Length: 235
Image (tube, rainbow, N blue to C red; front, side, top):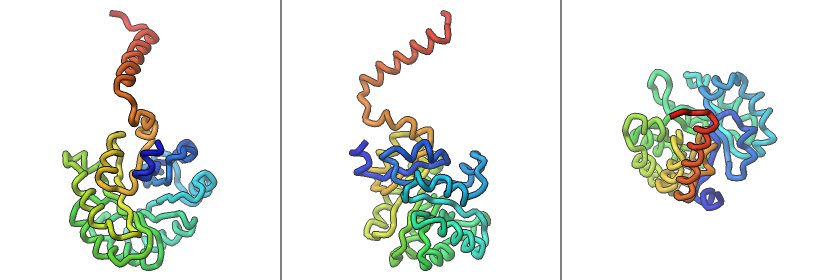
């Protein structure tokens, strides 16, 4: 796994932080309101406090969800106050379709670390460059590769474009969001990403990475036979 982490940073994406934080190759954490709701986590502050020791100063992103600029700023300051390692996740746009770029710039100008989330288009990437080219606050640009791929569009090109566009900006990291398969990690590396977020289902399959295919074939056949015998399947 060392060869992998030399090439890209793996952030666990979800709420089961106690399970995955002890893994040496996990270098950060993200979550979102959907993950939090599914886990019945309803308080950011207590969620962070409960996991602070296992997070151990690694970066974690927590998401705002209110729409007005005033509410975003208020919530962002609260989230950022949890710790120096906390990034405030701010969507690229409001639920109305109005851009959040001005409020994102305001937060960065106030030294609030931001993870700009839900980025899908070249236009959004280019519009961000205009506010980030002179930025000196750490910021993550999260491109939703997984959901882009759900539309039948290959996300590789837009992410490679973003990585090239921001490559000389030392405070900007590009993140491949929505890892659908272990292979996505290699795709993210090839695109030049700094970070990939990996959910539970993929975290649990990372032991397959770089596995010998002959060995994997044999193990698969053996598992099929084991399941058949244990379940008493008849022919």
